[in-house]
Amino acid sequence: MDSLDIRLLRAMCRGGVFTLQGVEPRLSLQELARRSGVGRITVRRRLGLWQQSGFWRRVVAFPNPDLLGSSFWMQGLQLDAGRDHARLERALEHALAPAISFHVQDFICPLLLSETEDRDARRQAALRKSPGVRVLCSPVKIDFPRSAVRFSRRDWTILRALRESAAPDWVAAAGKAGVTLRGLERRVQRLMDGNALFFFPELDFRRSPGTVAWMGVLLGGAVPAEEVRAELQKRFPDVLLIENIFPFQIFLPPHVRLLAKDGFPLFLPVTSASIGEQLRREITSLPGVLDVLVAFPTRNICYGDAWDERISRADRLTADND
Image (cartoon, rainbow, N blue to C red; front, side, top):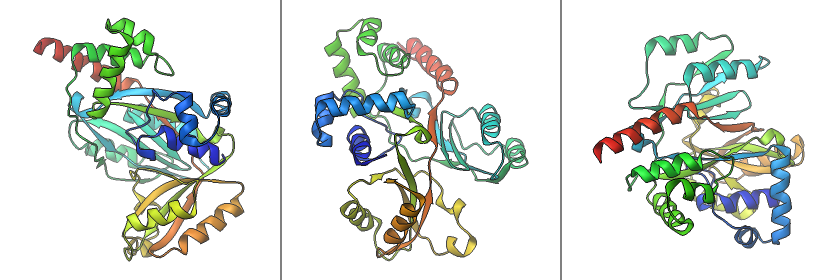
């Protein structure tokens, strides 16, 4: 990837940070061009390249888990190097039925929809003994913003319509919901502002137009994380910050685990492994930074089965309450 790719991603992400809250799906080419500092034709060509390469797969609409009576729980797994990761991932996806899953090299981070912390001893034991699973993290609840808006029956109809296509089809969604296009836009804006509706992009960095490194910046506690972030953004204009949902401790040997007080991930475009190592050394030299973990990211996926049944159930409950 290059600086334009990062600027476009940053322009699409809410708050300029890659988070579970996802992207703003209604930005025009003109607005994206303005935010990224290039022409509209350049933006159109680059977005077309994203789709042709398979990097940008689709945008998935999903409701706040609390509207489904659920929360996000993370079940991190580290796989043995050299194993058939594709086969292992399929088996784990079948066993866990995740809502969203992040894949970074040999680390898989499925997010599960659950009403309570999922510490089912039998399933945890089975996962721990699964061939190819080297480390199993305890389930961790993801701190997610609460919804300030409740869904109506029409909102559930809008959501299902938006989930039917690879990119939100606003005209089709308005038709199915029986509202005008302007009315749909206003309602979607209200739901997004109230943390009730989100749009999450599926990205496959293995198919990106260039190379991007996932870097976990580990902090020793001497300097506040906000100051380190500010300095990184000053030195590296092409940085894309990521919401910290990954358990960094899983990557660390015991002697480093005791030293690292905090950490956060980010994306940086690189042209080679040696450049990645050079960037690692430069970032590690910053005050407060203990070390930097460098990996080349794979992809994130949003699954349908985990959502669809719960969405239909919530819709039925809404109808009963009405």
